[in-house]
Image (cartoon, rainbow, N blue to C red; front, side):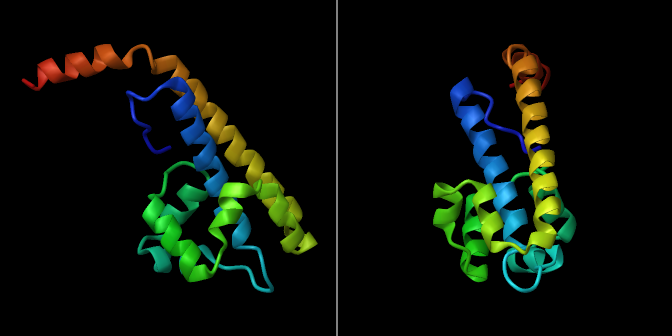
Length: 141
């Protein structure tokens, strides 16, 4: 998962994780909206990356910059307000029923990955200042 800013408040990084999860779910679900499923390779070409990176973003193993995400939404004519104002599950009404199970399963994977990252953040958050200090003194900073 993409690293979050170390110095932000707990509430802030939890909110950032929530947004990252919502973005991943939205991106995955939007590929199934419409008559034809959009392959990850097409998404990758639009934002100038590999389909593997798209997979990682959709699973929340990596993050995506806001500018790339906004560009993708614009190019695919996805409504960015849906990301901000709706829950990803609301997109199911625009997805063929045959894909609902797959999309909902993916949402569970994203939720599990976000929860795992929250636990890691909570576990190591207290150690980070000491580690930063040790790394800084070891590098001569």
